[in-house]
Amino acid sequence: MLIPHHRSCILVLLLQLLDLAVAHPPRSTTKACTNATFESLTLPNIDVLSIDSVVAQTTWPSPSDLVNAFPSTKSGTVEVCQLTITYTHVGQNDTINTWVWLPITSWNGRFVGMGGSGWVTGTASSLAQPVFEGYSAASTDGGHSASASIQSWALKGDDLNWSLIEDFSSITLDEASSFGKSATRLFYGSLPKYSYFNGCSTGGRQGHMLAQRFPAQYDGILAGSPAINWDEFIPAQYWPPLLMQELDYYPSSCELDAITNFAIKACDELDGVKDGIVSMPGLCYFDPFTLVGKKVRCTNPSDTITLSQKSAKFAASVWAGPKDSDGSSLWYGLTHDAPLTGLGGTNCSSPDACEPTPFFLSTDWLATFLSKNPLLDLSTIGLQEFRQLFHNSVTEFQSVIGTRDSNLAEFKKLGNKMITWHGMKDPYAFYNGTVDYYDRVRAFDPEVGDYYRFFSAPGVEHCSGGPGWFPGDGFKALVDWVERGKAPDTLFALATPTATGSADLPTRTARLCPYPKVLTYIKGNPDKASSFTCK
Image 1 (spheres, helix red, strand yellow):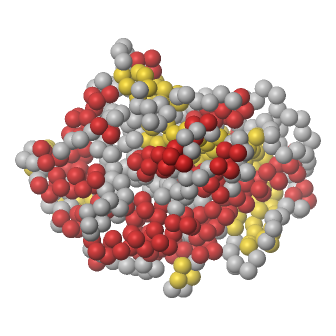
Image 2 (cartoon, rainbow, N blue to C red; image 1 turned 135 degrees about the vertical axis):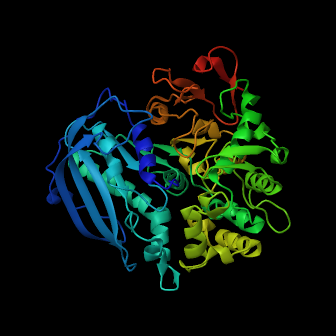
Image 3 (cartoon, helix red, strand yellow; image 1 turned 60 degrees about the vertical axis):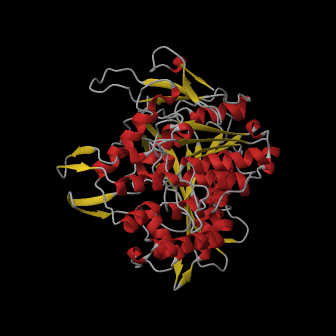
């Protein structure tokens, strides 16, 4: 995932596995949770270094899980066989850890692979709720630990460590799936009847990578806010701090939030209701230059500021996205309601003393992956250098991590299903990049809706957050589609109330629309899903 605190995104993903009871779980003859049970685990072209198994009590939710937005209605402890497989690819000098967790009782006959976030390929802790819900589950570290520095695995001397980059991008995702299903068979005596993948952000990219390159691994894939088109959108994340440098304009968060709030106010009622949510960003043509001269009262630091030509130009350029030297578009910009402080954040000691705080993925990418110099002072990078690095990114990495192949013919042929959703208020992964990918898949195959559906989530930020409607039932909808042939015409979603102050206010409900349909208010209580339709 792309948010700085990837753990909260993992929690959002886990919550999507709730309430998936199995009517008729398969019979199984569970083996002992010992290393001997799994000693035959292997894959072609790898050396297994160790297999460690342990019986552990897994509690959900744990005391450290901050599950606030959509709390679990279930809690308790289950006994789990926790398996760690450590291996290396022959001749590559890498070390990969893959975790497989197996509920000792009440296996529901299903397997799920869990995705990662940011530079984190996956974690063992993400498997806690799947096993609590009866799934066997797997994840992988992709060849580097979650706490590892970028240069420790992305570079080999003065060059890129392509083996570990490919491990992170794709290869270990396939291997974790194979290991997980094989361990399931060894433990229960049968392969899972259905296999699923669940991920958001980096996990969403992983889901698309699996559908594109390893389509036989999963019957169903839930891929939220996907970090696809990585080679383009990650360098595009550096566009806002680059603009600050070019404009010599370093605004406070108050100033940026004010601009965003003005844009939301201008475009809020395009869907027919005033609720602080922009549901039709494609119709939002707000001109930030109309704000020039407006005064904004700020606190921390305390000041009254006047919106300037520079502030308007900055906002307009961020919404438009990075441009090449001939004025053509390099990539998409943020939607008007997405917080500008995500990619254009600053740290201010006083109203007139602010420094940019670029998003870590973009700085890692430009400095380490593209310039091969983790200590590079990015303030030395101007527009010309940025554009060259952008083109280099596409040239070097499109085939490795771009995840943009619109040909899903094999995935379709196998009868598999994929659901993607994306928050339209996402401040990190550009919403229109997902729109672009789905449009290209639709152009390649007009029958895409038979196996792959994309839902827009108005007012939702990156994988969670924001005032909009979060599709907490996305995983359940996927299971219904795969196992019962019930294709989702909408996704049930929940949002925070429109008013503030009372803890007793009802939660807003909506049914998210499949792209290109748009959620549109008809009449009635705007907190109820029945008051909206898809047009």
